Length: 384
Image (cartoon, rainbow, N blue to C red; front, side, top):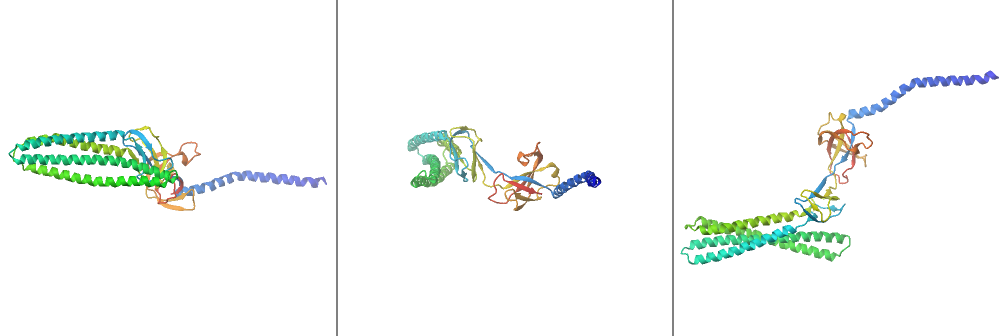
């Protein structure tokens, strides 16, 4: 019975050795087959153009002052939505107000000087035998008087515009407090009524200033016309008026400069968006052109992706691309390449967070359709 028990064991060993031998022979073939299976899809992707990851571009606005000054107040908070033209910060305008008061004082001085000249001219005219000289001085005086009235009204208009900016900021703050139920609706109504009343007054002042400008131009034209047809040699009239006219011109320039300086003390949002950064606090001194805060547009208008160097040979503007949002890969967006980067550059880390060494590629810009729910920075898969 012993031989019948050992024969099956020998047979199993023999079959096992043969199977192992065949597997060793087939191992290289299986390895090459696996490599081929992996390489074929990669090759097909390369032939089709491949795909990369891109990100919705951010549209960021930095709000900065055109002049240096002390930051008076930041009117908005972080992550607050703002609208185009809304006041977001103010700079101190004390220096500009002092300059405006100085200009008004000098205007009064010129007005007194004009009154003195008027009295002198009237005394001289009484003893003159020729009425033309008297009329010439009267026309010159009327032109200067109209100019002073115009500049005085312009100074008052500028002061009211400054007050209107303050009322606008107070109205914005009251509106925010009313939305948070931290103040009553009556307070908001009072702030609105004060703002609208001053705005209406300024509108009337603007019409008055425009009328005075026209009156000054007409008076000056009458003086020049009379002077052109004057027959007697009386240089004293024109000579006496030249210093006064120069002084008036200087005050006009000063008022315009003060108005410009005051307008630059108010920083407004250049577009709709959300405040994503506040770089300076109240009371800090900021330089001209230094950003005070940053606003991010609510939606993106394009995608930027980086194509590896080995895939850029046949790429050019106008190439059709297919976009798929990572958040919604089932929806496909068809677009085309709008432009390419000027040079091959190092790709951002987000393109390949697991890369052990930096990658290099060419920036590719693709426009997005107007889709309001696409957020800046959102990831896309781009197929070329």
